[in-house]
Image (tube, rainbow, N blue to C red; front, side):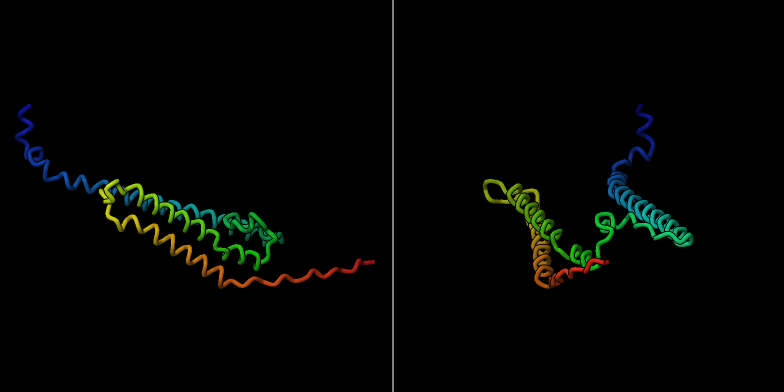
Length: 163
């Protein structure tokens, strides 16, 4: 058993521990990159198949099929461009995300604050980051709401019955 101690690589294991400690973040980075590349590859393949289908449909004189990656067409395929634009600029997503981030910031603030009103185990700027992002999203939603013009509703023109 003591013969293993004479090996130089086992005697200096302490020198290699920081290297193995760095392998975990590096491997997590590469796993994230692999997931991102795979996601982009499969999305590209899906778009390529849709374009091939649309090309074949146009060659045969058929209408272009709905794009499966467009959520607006899945909900309302006959929506006008003004209706789609008004849905996209509504800012409801910004309001929801802003309120969620403000709640996360408040939860972090009260969760890491102990009874002596001091913060332990976390720098205080980390607590305020989601709060500031939430406030920025709420301001963006307010600006979007104030700057979007509502289209006047056109009165419906009754059509005369065809005889």
